[in-house]
Image 1 (cartoon, rainbow, N blue to C red):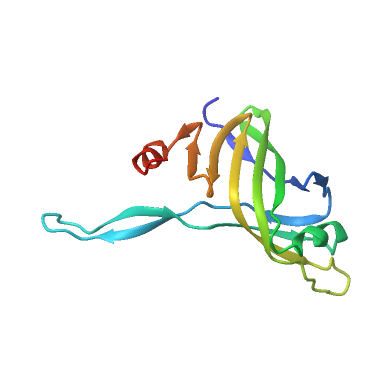
Image 2: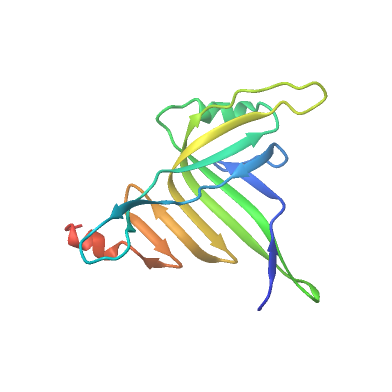
Amino acid sequence: MANLINRITNANIYVNGVNFLGRAEEVELPQPKLKMAEHKALGLFAEIELPTVLQKMTAKIKWASLYPEVLAVAFLPFTPSQVMVRANMLQFNSAGLQAQVPVVAMMTALFDEMPGFKVIKGENSESPSSLTVWRYTLTIAGVQQLMIDAFANVYQVQGVDQLAQYRANQGG
């Protein structure tokens, strides 16, 4: 399907299998980012940057209020949680809606900023939390787009292991 415009405008969050439908206002998934190092060398006309490592991954959730089920796992300093975000992606072209496909993000993450809360008269009491992400998988329409496992040195793009040679060269 060429020239499709994709739209994601809503999602649901699950923490350790518990459905949090309608209890979060916003979720920000990890944005994997490479750490780059400047390389200057004789013979090169230009300075360049080369990748070194993948920077730490983080996620954020803005809860619509305080929820004891979230607090029960967020306050555990050594126990990671399984966080799943599920969304429906609408795909449009000039003829209108062409398809609806699932988008699923899975994270093994540790709450590093526990939910507090802010009260504003007449509004939801926002309760933000942040997570440090150790494992992240993004699947669109049943196809795994990305899988990163920091502890296992795994970085896959559409099922292709980008670090296979890296691990082999290190003997593992």
